[in-house]
Image 1: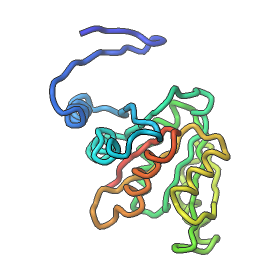
Image 2: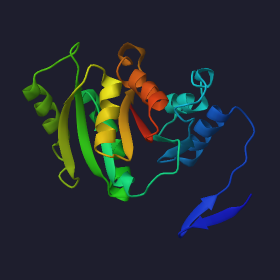
Image 3: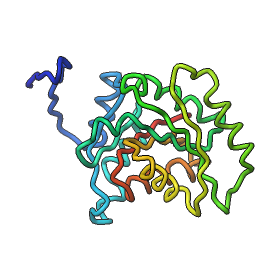
Length: 203
């Protein structure tokens, strides 16, 4: 086992045997990890390597936020994070869990509500949801945006690319009764964009 340092940050190399996704999740539990950073296939990978991937399984089972990275990350781009959500009360704890990461990276947060023709809500209601979400988070720099698009996933990507965001964050709920938005969107973003995806679960 080798020990290294990256700019005064200790790094411990660990070699384990087993199914990669399960080993990563088990290690995260054991170490009480605050964040898992995992490499992911780029958007041009073979479709068969996407479904059931290690990244997806870690997203679903990890006890902490998971950041999937496909390419070398520009540190300056990391200063801008897009947090896409329905901004309902149930998902708010997920954003609270992201606060240590946001503070450490010193990133500016862009709340993003995607309005689609199929699930359109009044602009005032969307604004109110985001304002309620931001209440009590005055120590963070938060901008609020409503973006109209025919599809949620494409809207998130279009907005993030327009803003040159370095991270897209999604609050993910693993309960089967409420997975259509969060998990479906997270998986699709992984497939369709090379922007790092940060997933954090809420119960």
